[in-house]
Image (tube, rainbow, N blue to C red; front, side, top):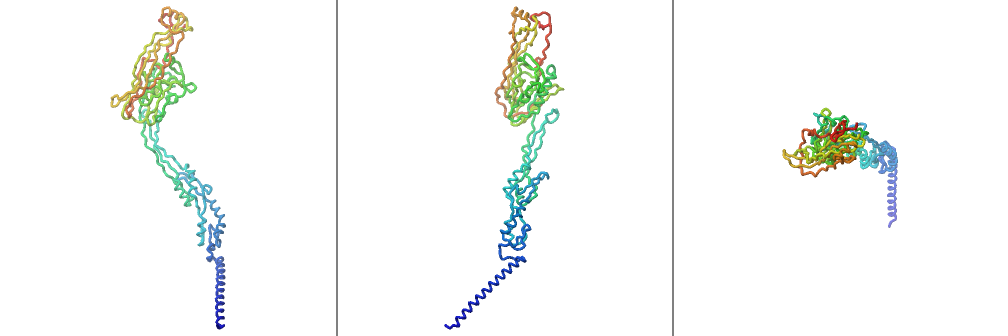
Amino acid sequence: MPRIGKWRNSNKSAGVFAVTATVVAMVFVLGAVLMFLSKSFGFPSLDKHVYPGGTTVEGVDIGGMTPAEAKDALSGVENDFISSYSCTLRSPDSDEKKHVFTSEDYTVRTDIENVLESAEDGGSYSLSYVISAQSIKRCLLDIADDYEVQPQPYEIKFDKSFHPHGERFTLAEGSDGQELDIDSCVESIMRGETDIEAPITVTSNKGVIPSLPVLIGSYKTSFKGGALAAPNRVYNIKKAAEIINGSVVDAFKTFSCNDALGNRTEKAGWRLAPGITEGGADTEDQPGGGVCQVSSTLFNAVLYADMEIVERRSHSKQISYCEGGRDATIDSGSIDFVWKNTSSAPVYVFVWADEDAKELLCEIYGSPKTDYEIDIEAVLTEEIPPSEDEYILDETLSSNARVEDNPPITGYVYKTYRVYYKDGVEQSRELVAESHYNMHPRRFRVGRSYYKKLNATAAPISSPKPSKTPKPASSTPAAATQTPASPTNAPTSIPTAPPTPDTPSEAPETPPPSESSPPSPTEDVVEP
């Protein structure tokens, strides 16, 4: 092969190498020039991991920085941005009622990652808050009570004072409630709002409009004349009436007179007035004397109201302000009058003393009855005449003296019925009480000579020492007979206890014994 051909090939390779070297050098120089121009004049960089010149975040220039460098450079700014976070929640009805939240109250971050990613195209950027919805909700639940208003149902209000022509009851309209709309509030905060009027949800829950109570039972008694009108006794009646007046007995609850009145003592403000002692044979002044007229009047009103009698006892002798079988005695800590509201709604008790008319009145209001009427019948089932006179030796008397301790008292037994009527026809009757009033013979205390004379003539003589007649056992209400299922309208006028002129009052005045001439078996003689 000729030599010239070989040299030609060698020259060709050398030329290719020279051209390649020249291109590489030019690219290197061009890259250096572009980098210089990029840094000096903001021309775009060929390196995608470096931000263009003039790129700013919250005013901080991150041009020419890598994302890691930029994030590090912005860390202080980001911390200050989070620390400056504040969101005010204002109440719609009060400028003073507000809450201010900071980054210490719930989790607050920034969107710096998204900002740095967007900043690769250059320009100016601001940070935004990124808040955890769950942490906001927890925080709002802690302060939700400050914005809550409970809905108020319709309310029955009543006037305890006695107004003959006024309204006992009025109906107060209920009001809507409100509560903080937590979900709406979370959305507003997450949108970046920092001054928010608290979103409120109205809660309407007034309930069913109740019917006003109506009169379902009433009764009145008199304290006119004699011992019934004694000032201290009237004072005690008024005091007891004022305590009980306005009582509300809820559905299926009981009412106790003793619980309401408390122990009757002078220290508690009760005055001394006559009360029955010796099983009905005598009286003595006791604190609270006369309050039994209040319990007895209430007892009758409760019967008309068709409530259950839980505990009731009659007096040991018949009294003048109630007919037999219709009284209810009480005694602190021992004898009580207790009744139960058997309806499904509250009942309201009003008791007051009309001093002008000398009357004690009681009214009970509750749910209206519709189908039946009630009457009360007290039936005398037995009359017990006094036994023969009794004479008791009293050595403190002069020898021929005779003093009457008590007049003869007739005993009685009554059965009290609650009678149910419909359209004027009796449907059923319920035995609610049995009352026993003690019989007492006339009793005398006599001196020694009188006592001997009685022995000589074989006259009846009692034991030398007087014995107290025990009080009767409590009358327990009998089981109710079947009554109509639905109630009726209460009486429109207040029933009044019929007068019993021949019956001794609860606190009769005992006339003082009179002096007489020399003793005889038929004369009353007092010690000279």
